[in-house]
Length: 174
Image (cartoon, rainbow, N blue to C red; front, side):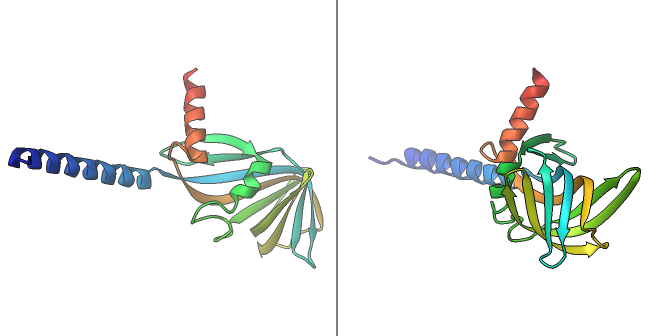
């Protein structure tokens, strides 16, 4: 038999559960971070005819970091970065990132701004199709750093960023 008291208790419990769920969804939406990535390689080659940039002997780890307020940093396997490229609704596949390609030749730094598309890892070489935005890319270069523009990633416990956040905090605690 349903009494008014039971009905009010049930309605109150339901309202509290719905409110709690909405708060968790709102918090999850706020728990986003903008991640920047850095890839390094011993050398590079650029084919102007195909707009193909190849990072020769690319580092096995791609570095990532965030800005305030999270201040997270870490690295991921470059091989894991490639499939990650197309993950999420705001992925690099749907909105290709800008990147700063820095070439250190002796004591001279040369910088070029490019849009990166279609990453392909072949052994120790990582290739991108690029659109050059600024600069006249050389055919070859050495001591390469690629600073890749931001991508927003959730900091949920099951996301890559969330796992990295927990690992980073655990490393800092121990």
